[in-house]
Amino acid sequence: MHEIDQHKVIISQASLKKSLVKDEINKLVAELVDEGKKLAANHTFLVFDAEAVAGIIHLKACIRFAIKAFKDKTNIAKNLNAEIMLYLSGNRQISKAFPKVGITSSTKKLLMLQIVNFSNDLKEIKQFNFKSFFDKLGIEIQDYKINVDEIAVDNIDKVLKNLEISDEVIHRFTKSKSISSTDYAIIEKLAIEKSALLNLEK
Image (tube, rainbow, N blue to C red; front, side, top):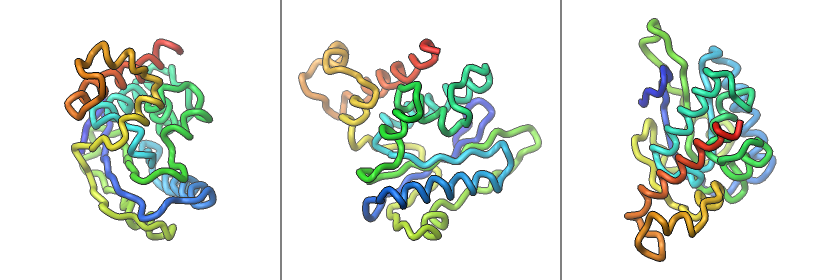
């Protein structure tokens, strides 16, 4: 479990056994909203495309940016989960952010967040069972892991495209002409900087 600015964050991940169609995606989103309504206002759920993240540090930074935006009352979205998606996409409009980082028919891997705004009285957090949630919807997942500390970056090209980080910018920081796994730390830093720019644009 991660702690970010007085919020407990549980990050889980899984792979889809098969791609989802539009109706399945819509139902998933609607059901997740309903699950959130059953809990206290200090709980937030989010399920999104794992390939939209440049690493665990990038994800935690975007969560931190979103939490700070609500604290400072500079948030763009009405909900924390939507605000996080804006930062992950580096975009101010949710209609443009969702196709970039949300679940689509091309999504293969999922990241799932359970975020709880805690007080001194909150000693224990009941983990939400995303596996049971997907089972109830008839969506088959595999490789389900709860409370992960690392996120493998499988599609760096998608991250770069989403955040509009050009080859020219990358090559200023990397020595090679092509991106290798050793450059991922640099890419993650650039992704964080790009996401952080959303604050300056407000």
